[in-house]
Amino acid sequence: MSRTAVPLRVDDLSPFAKTLRQSLSGHEGVPTHVELLNMLAKAAGFANYQHLRADAEASNRLVAATEPVPRPDLEQVAKVARYFDDAGVLTSWPSRLAHQTLTQWAFWSRIPRGETYDERGISALIKGWHAFGDHAIIRRAMVDAKMLERNQNGREYRRIEQVPPPELAPLLAHLEARKRAT
Image (cartoon, rainbow, N blue to C red; front, side, top):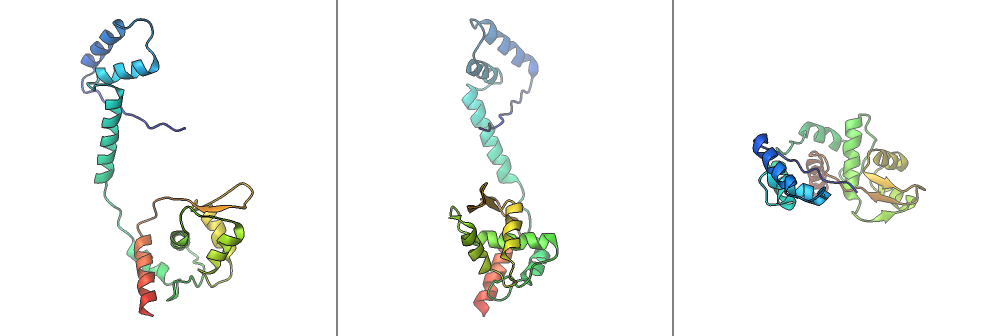
């Protein structure tokens, strides 16, 4: 099980060391792991380790909320949209890797989350979304790009949940607008 790193920032090391020394000298024997975590947190000015951890998590949320949202490359969206017809079907496989990846994201968005498919099932979905006759290349590319998860024996496929690139939303909106216009 992976652990979340909890940073410990100390403004002045001397009072931290004195407080920690007092806590250790007043303790009988060697402190347990949890006792030592609480001593470190108290020496840094927190009530206990849980308080330190909650403060670190709140800081992480604040930093994540203030990070700028990346702007989509609308030129790339327009280029990739040309590979799709008015019904949203991929007409040819793009030669540029960046364009291939964005078309795979469009397919990824169409796969229902949480569903498990066998190879025939996932291939049937993909076959309905392209018109150039090679569903296997798309399926393999999506597995290689970690958009689809395939179990060891290759019998089950599942969409891997992740944050898509910023270009996906404008591409899907463009394809939907073209579909409605026809």
